[in-house]
Length: 471
Ligand SMILES: *Cc1c(COP(=O)(O)O)cnc(C)c1O
Figure 1 (cartoon, rainbow, N blue to C red):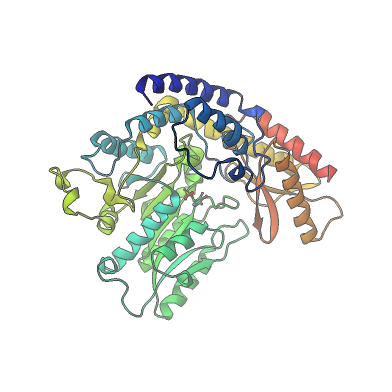
Figure 2: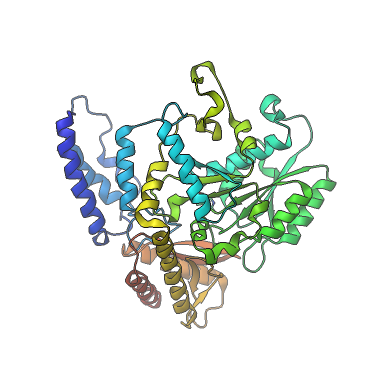
């Protein structure tokens, strides 16, 4: 493609992008496609001869777009959001254009130094102590794996990196039964073994039971295990439960365990000073992750990982083959040594654009609005006789169910709510997902879209109630 053609196609696409965002509500949130539908429309062999851009783009609109779930739709209430915003998209256009690979300072000095500065901004914006150092990882799963590996290395005096696991002995890791699956995945990848992961029971609010944690650690010590790490959830994925950080941190200090905080979704709410109660005790924590790519208007992927002990992180991952040696040496940050991958995308640019475009106050206002909208939805649920709330609503996620009078059987209620969700999602006017809390199917409504407004939440509520009563 010649640059002149690129220029004209790019202009067309920018218009298409603006139209897409402006009229997104006219599309079904979730497509009506069956597995294999799209695959069947794609030729099994690549083209041998060059194809015209308009043909390619035509197929994008005809084949791909109708098979997409529209995550930026204001009636997307499923999972957790992966919200984006115009400034973030603009930055990604620049990032893609420069196509820089930001593995070391020398390969992209400005990208490295911007990342350093933006992570300092972010640290202050969410109220972390300024003793923490930040780095951008692709996802929270990766950040949590980095935490487990650093914990493993620090506890073994970096011997496992050097020689592998010694015979005998066992490190144990702790999280609540409601913690994210990425912890189990990380424990497996880190070579600790799934059977070393202790899932600690939760209390009535689905937060970790601290006494049970203390008992589990004591039992493992008695068995000759070495308790290694606790992963506390600030905002579980199921119901956004908040594990009590300070008491957990005190136990970790007492027994010399690494404490990692998984705040993948909820971390964005820390922009609001009135939400910082969630991280009381943060000064005792070893590492912390949250995803600006979930709720902070920064398109996927962008995960902010903060550590108290920068040296433990870098010592775990650093490598220096001859072909990567540069004149600056250790006077600069080489982010390839701050995580798993060598090559890195330039992710700091979109964060910089987003933070500057909205300002801290603008971001706070959007997040505060989402929390208020979710709380008013929860109020509606509470005030309606044939619906009920199934978990506390500290953030912008509401777990609820339809519970018509006279239906007491739990399995009947579960199938009723699953049917309600399927009917709602098939309609294409909204999208929500479910979880199970104490064996009960809970519908989850998460308010977090960049363009979501009061009317979308109100429409969702009226659609949910009318669909339920029609079942
Ligand atoms: C979403 C989520 C994750 C995983 O996030 P990725 O960035 O997709 O790896 C981890 N923990 C919690 C609590 C989450 O909600």
